[in-house]
Image (tube, rainbow, N blue to C red; front, side, top):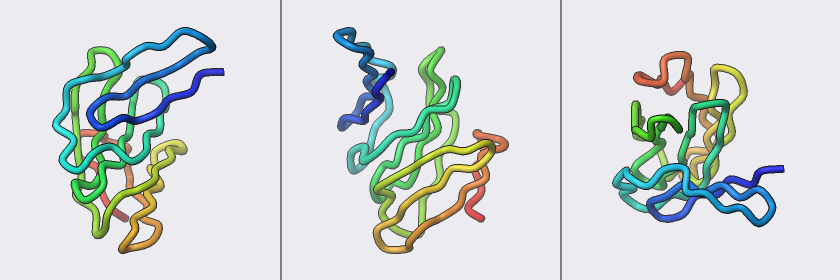
Length: 104
């Protein structure tokens, strides 16, 4: 089992005793609050900066979306990211095109 966690400006994965930095590049405005991974796509809940969509290989931010409230939690299922926003409840974001996410 691989655990993936978000730190202020990094996405780190751990499999047993092996720790690997997945991404260390983007300017997390308020600091990463949560992270979800689906294949090569990483979705970061980035507090008041919204969400960032990042590829694992190569490590690059490919999209972002400012949310109606502070993004504090995220999960991905299929073409949707489910974002828990402190000020706006649960938001459903269409990530079919991760370069242009849409808040539904």
